[in-house]
Amino acid sequence: MHVAEEIGLARSIQVQERFSEYYRKHSVNIIPPSLIRQREFGFILLREGIMLRHKSFGNLGALRSFLASTTPSDVYYSSAYYEKPEAGMKEKGWVGADLVFDIDADHIPTPCNKVHDRWICSNCGFAGLGACPDKCPSCEGARFDSNTWTCEACLESAKDETRKLLRILTEDFGLGDDELSVYYSGNRGYHVHVESKSIHLLDSTTRKEIADYIIGLGFTAELHGLTGKDRIMIEPLSERTGWRARIASGIKEFLTQANNRDLEKLGLAKNVIDFLIKNKQIILGRLSGKGWIDVKGVGAKSWSKIIDWIADRQASKIDTVVTTDIHRLIRLGGSLHGKTGFKKVEVSVSSLDQFDPLKEAVAFRDGQMIVDITEAPKFRVGYTHYGPFKNVSHKELPTAAAVFLLCKGAAQVVE
Ligand SMILES: [Zn+2]
Ligand SMILES: [Zn+2]
Image 1 (tube, protein in one colour):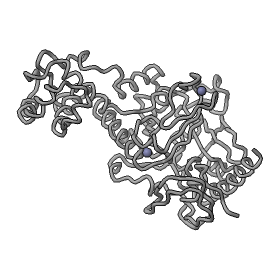
Image 2 (cartoon, protein in one colour; image 1 turned 120 degrees about the vertical axis):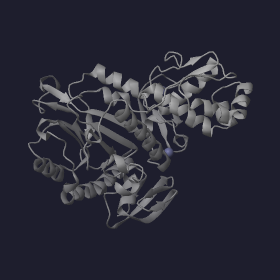
Image 3 (cartoon, rainbow, N blue to C red; image 1 turned 90 degrees about the horizontal axis):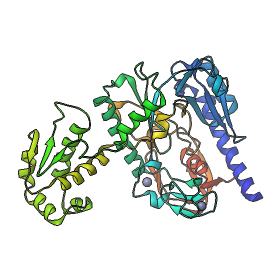
């Protein structure tokens, strides 16, 4: 116990020095939120390991010097605007809030999370691989300690979900690029912030409805009247936006690429699969029309299975709790992520496709550190791949890669 505590302390001192240097020398990276005076700020203090909340700053300079002098591991600000941001929750005087979306690999069932993520029940110690369950299978407890990894495949999935979210926000909600800001979180996902007078005053219930729409909660082909006996409703995107049009374009995209195995996954009967594969070109030709399209050979139930599967793929897997919370604290742009040592960086909507988080978010670009590594899968920082490692002593690594392992708790500095 004592040894572990001492190692933990040694690690935090090394990380602390780097973080402190970052906030002293690179505070220009900090992206201030709009109306900074009306925001509540929160910090996890690196040295003390405690959360400090209900802070406010009159201007960016005051915030930057606070960061340089206190060295937090994580910095947050409120999506809300308050009359008195330093007061207790009830006395703050809520004025409005940005609409915030959080997309995190924690909420995306990637195939690799079973390889690199672990959880352990805080109550009974039952452990498993992959994303945390809602309830412990052994004791039904709901609190877990988790050990997750920042992996390239997970980051790519998070980017896909972000693309889908942006499509829904612009096409269905009519938001302009100037009202949307996209950020890489510095760890396993992306944030999208909407700042607009039209959403400022929305209450929690309304935000929940927006979130439910985006995740396609309760969407079924039947309820939307998209299927009938041997026919299907096609509503082209050019005439309409929303789920019906999204489904119409999704069906064509899916059937164009689908092979036997893809169709089997949907639980379709063998004769339906054979029919779809054999008549694919004819069916695709018909589906380029609009309104009710007759397709004898594929019944309403089969179309429903196809459409419901497509709806699930077209929905964006946002964390609905974040969007619904009108007092949420969110990570500050340009600040460091305590679990990686990467920074939260802004990505322009138009360059999201080319954006490489593992290059753009690197905060520590100089120097080397020597570390003892306990265990780490293969990972990339900048252009270079490292690992996998298991019990490797005296490994010299560039500072960013070493800090990443230290933040993950996978290494210790060799003095
Ligand atoms: Zn348990
Ligand atoms: Zn992964």
